[in-house]
Image 1 (cartoon, rainbow, N blue to C red):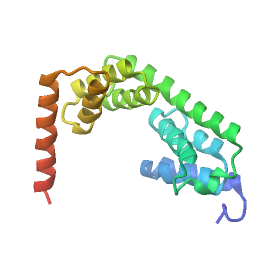
Image 2 (cartoon, rainbow, N blue to C red):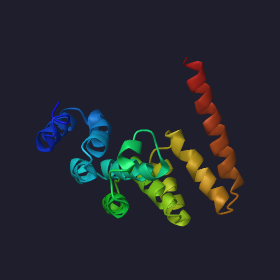
Image 3 (cartoon, helix red, strand yellow):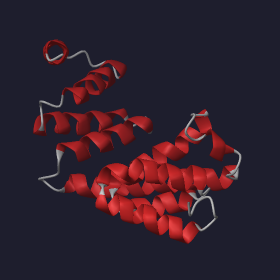
Length: 182
């Protein structure tokens, strides 16, 4: 209602409160800031210093360039240079937060995987491989990190056959478990 009435400050306050109460509402709130309020800067503000949220805002903003359905309405509203600046700012902030987080010896595997994904997007394959390996080492059961690691190793022409066989077998086993659970 506040959005329809043009009450940006009130709408943002309610979105921020919603995210505070329910973490899972972040993406929807960020999309509302970007699409309905035409204020990508508020989506960044909503993300705060949370690296995962910043990375998600960066992805949402970057999707504007690719004509995604959720963002197409905003593409015309944002000036291209301002849009690119916001994308870069979100990515840079997320990248720095993740780098700092991953320097700690007890960094969570998900932080390493997120940082690896950002390095992969930047085409820094060696760093991406290093962080995917660390993520897999910390939490081997997260099989969805194994495929990007294997893909990167293949891209840089590192045919570690033992690793590839082990990852293939592990992915097959996980997929079979998922199929059998239905």
